[in-house]
Length: 188
Picture 1: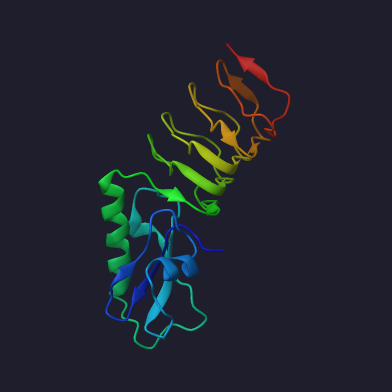
Picture 2: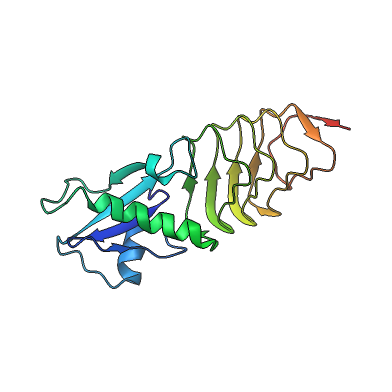
């Protein structure tokens, strides 16, 4: 499964990626690349600090690292992602977005407008105020959350929402149909 953030780097250090495409095969097709041994599939995965790309885990998604790989190419991938994040453009994610390694999120974090698969945030125990979830997602796993901030809004178009550890529900919070939640007491 391709992870956020997926890209392809050629043997000259050029980074290929497309908004809305998570699959390396689909990136190859969209960018008209042919696998001739002159590029590598790569991923950047956020670990704990969503906004600090320099702390994200870098992975060459190949069975064998190409002999031409220059470690400096990693910084090219990080810079492409930083530039996109600074642009303020919304990201559309096709496929599942596995962010299960994150234990915290920064205040005001914004996710892609659409995640066609699921958004896995299963290690979070709290949410910051102002979090903005995708408008549409296949599913949303927040199974370790015990509380919600007031005013949180969940996607109206979501396959399912897992809030199994939630103990109270702030007044006015509307849960999508099909949400996995225990019987809750609404907080006034």
